[in-house]
Structure formats: structure tokens, C-alpha cells
Length: 279
Image (tube, rainbow, N blue to C red):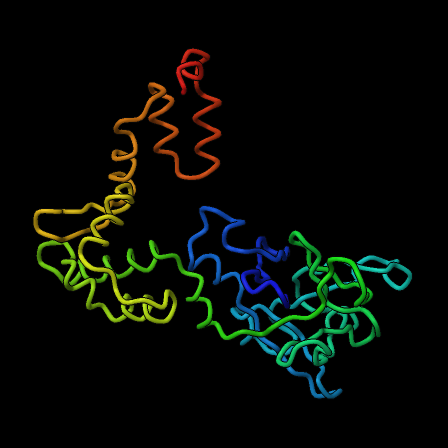
């Protein structure tokens, strides 16, 4: 959505779409987040600038195949002011075909108008809804202008931890010791590009890396004596988290939990004494 450069239209279920930023879906990795945000424009010959928006992974299945954005699924859409947007195989072109219109506000941005529903546009309504609604440019929080960005832009939204984890894993695989030397990490092309292009700075020195890895000890195992590092894998991370935690057995389980489901299970299985022992 225009004005929300960190928000992307994503597939969050088989037929459900949401507009989300990375911080709104904690626990979802970089690759998982952006794999669900890949779409393609399928240009249709009947009318100039007519298209369908389809999930990229299904784009090779022909005109009638694949999953496209669909709207107006209720019988009263002709009289209603808006409709939910979902994914599905197109059976009615009136509920999927769009006209691409240049945004009047920003060069390079576009609006997607219903080809058979003039005045109704693909709309982002905060916090996360995607609708087909009547356009109201004055007032309100609805956004009808969208930017189409190349998938390579996604790498701007990688965290430092994700960049370094990928580089450490690559270096470890090429090392007989199973560790990545800090000197090799600092020379890694992806790390250098990230610092130069995304952070606008030179690559950290060894002391900076040491501070970072020690501050993220649950994910990285840092050997200060030899200036080298490797990743902790899931079981090792759980063991690391369980050290020096308060709250008895429950505290250990909470520290080792991988996501909301495991947190909830740990609390539900705990006794009252365990809960009272938490700080």
C-alpha cells in the first residue's frame, strides 16, 4: 500500500489475504513471510490494462488455472459498498478481472479497479484487511494505491540476525571445524552488501561482532578465544534458554518455548505453585 512501505499483501491461509508488516507476525521467518507475498499480473487481451492478480506459484497454470484474487462473492455486492477479497479459481470473470489505473498521487503506483464494477477498487483498510470498495480519496484510512515491487526488494527487510545467521551457516558448511571465523564473516559478500547498502556503514569490527553474538547467545555459539562462531540449533537453543531462568520448571519450559502455541501449552499444563514461582 502506498505510504506503508513495510506492509505487504500476503496469503495467510488457503483462501485468505491480509496486509501485514513483518513485526506483526512474530515467529514467521523472512523466507516464509515473503514467500506468501509473491503475486503476478496476468494481462488479459480483451481490454487495455485488464488483468488478474494471481499467486506467483500458480501463475504457470494458464488463464483458467491458478489462484486469483476474487471479490463480490455475496449476492448483494451490486448494492453493497464493499466486498471481502479472497483467493480462488476464477469461475466468473466479473469477480476477478481488474483494470490497472495509474495513481493520481504517486508516479509508479497503481489502482486496481473492478473491470465490471466502475468506481470500486482494491483497498487496504488498516490494520490488515483487503477489500474491494468504493474509492474515497478524501478522509478515512483506506488506501487504494499500491506499489508493485520486485521480489529482490524484500531483502531490505531482513534483520541483522537473519543476515548473519545465513552467512554463518554458509561459512560453517565450508569449514572443517564447523565454525565460521569472524575474518571470513567480515569478508562475506552478503554481509558486506547488507552493511553497505542497508545499514549505510562499514562492516563491524571483531569487537562489534563479539558484542552482538554474546547478546544473541540463544542463537549463536561464540568462541571468543578463537574468534569464531556457529549456530545453535533448536535443541541447543532450548538448553541455552533453560540456563539461569527463574520460575522453576515452568520458567524453563517458557524459556524454551518456540512460539505462542508452546507458551500456551506450558502455562496450561503448569500447577499453581509453578505459576506463583514466576517473577
